[in-house]
Image 1 (cartoon, one colour):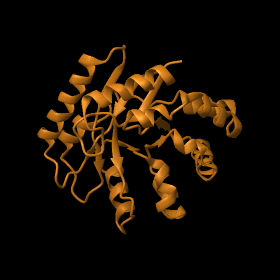
Image 2: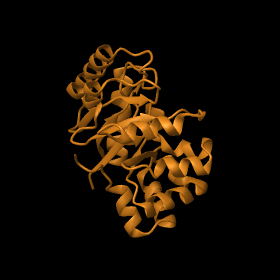
Image 3: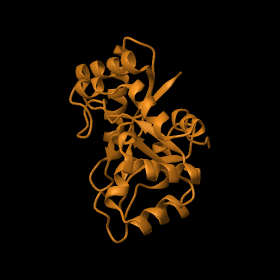
Length: 231
């Protein structure tokens, strides 16, 4: 089975990613050999309030090219920013370049500490732009967001969730995930791995066993084969 990591943090040169290319290559090699992952999506954090778009993209493209040139196995890679939700976001032309390939989805990071205007800002982005939203590291949202607020957020049109493989081992999160699958929300699984040590702790046979204990075959197929609707 072709396996994809929808949140690999092994892109050198960004604060929320790995430190250097040698470490990145080691981690990706382990994910490939140990878990059969052959597609990697990188979403380094982009803050419209402080990051310069041209500089950010130059660094991201340079890091991606360096990885591609040195990987010892065949893999598909892409990088797109995860945009911090702010009052003022980049203009439409820039956001278009931020879209996940072949889709109209933007990766967006919500504040861990909910602000009073978080829900309205996200709703405004969804309703007044041509883009759909992939909420990154969404396994954190049930911890920090009140249930009613989170319910309204995931009910916005075009919302998808990126969650970690590790969150599948949490019984509390499993309840939330069942609800999302029943709603038909696209769910994308990512490792969040940012070191060879963490890559070594990821075992897909354990993940499959946990899925089989908590989800139906149809749900498992959706989780393991999920992608984003094409634009």
